[in-house]
Image (cartoon, rainbow, N blue to C red; front, side, top):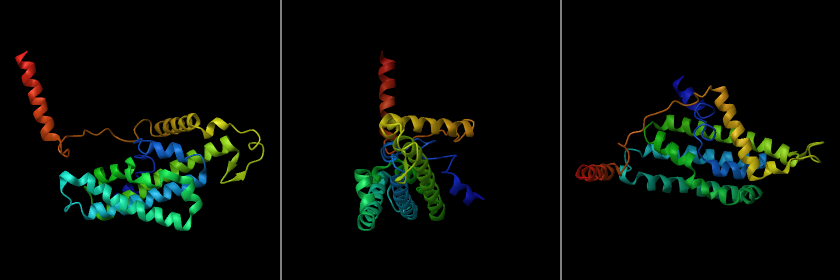
Length: 228
């Protein structure tokens, strides 16, 4: 049950887009067509799975002070592999995704899961977390893109929909329409979960490499205030 909980966690309770509000930029930019959403979601899922496994396997070897640069290098390697595969076997998708495919390297979802989960859990759990988060990201993109494409273009996966093709709401394919659908989906998830999709967590400074310097700065400021 614990493994199943990790797997389905990213679908609703900790959905990376609608609950954690990560990866907003590619979500809004890519979610104009359902086919692009599926492609972007699968690419991100493959990178999430590979990077989570690699980071979890190497978590005891990577020095704490340079863990973020190491994560980026590992993630960049998987993104390069995915991008080359997409260019070779799906050139049309590669052209549609454009710059957002290589920008998966700095996607907050992937870096966030590497830091908050893969860095602290076993390889199997990290793999399940990567699949779950990728599935949640893909489903969110698909739902958003379907709504925006059907209402904004009158098509779905390129197939014309009677009536809507001649009476589409073009603003739905633009940024305002994207933010509107995004906000509605967040509100829907919040309503379904009754505002408890994710529990609030106290975050400490123990894992921050700048914790020591921050403490000295606070002490210095306190000393100045005492003098005044």
